[in-house]
Length: 247
Ligand code: SF4
Image (cartoon, rainbow, N blue to C red; front, side, top):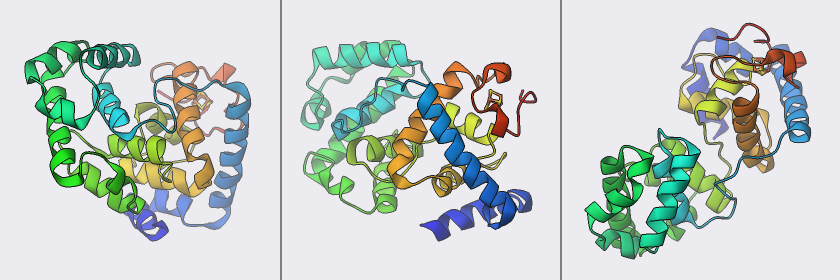
């Protein structure tokens, strides 16, 4: 796992590889990472919606709904879908696709999301005995690959399901996690999804992965915003290499 991460990071640039390959800068980043975690834990509340220990299929459906839309729309779509249908592969595999679409319209991309939810439901029924248990029992990288073979399931969706429903050691990288971790120097500035995930994981202990994911989201929403990061009010500005200079 660590080797795969190292290879992924190396494939970025020599500069980013140096940061994550050991030495003084790496050690400093490790120290900063622990300081950032402690400070954010003390100063932030956690985002809602996805709960640790949630049913894996429900988490899969919620996460597909959440793609490219706001939390409020995801919640509305999920509420409407769960009022109309039991959220299970058996029920959603057989549901009228038009009815699923009507329920989740508010989440946007409702036609492709409906098709993805129904196709995943059918695959889970036909190949995995009607639930995700056998996938969740796999080693984390194999489980990720298996989930990502389903329509509509990319790395973030797979990681959310594995982390929140099975406690697997992986850090989902959403838009906030991506932006904030790069600004804080915890991930390579031009890193792709895998480079960011692997470098974040190298800086924290697996027991903290879910917390790190949620705190970076909260920090990104509240302070380290995409357009105007509020560096003067930022509780981790003293260890941030981007302080005052982020776009
Ligand atoms: S100092 Fe600014 S750029 Fe750095 S984490 Fe805080 S808000 Fe983001």
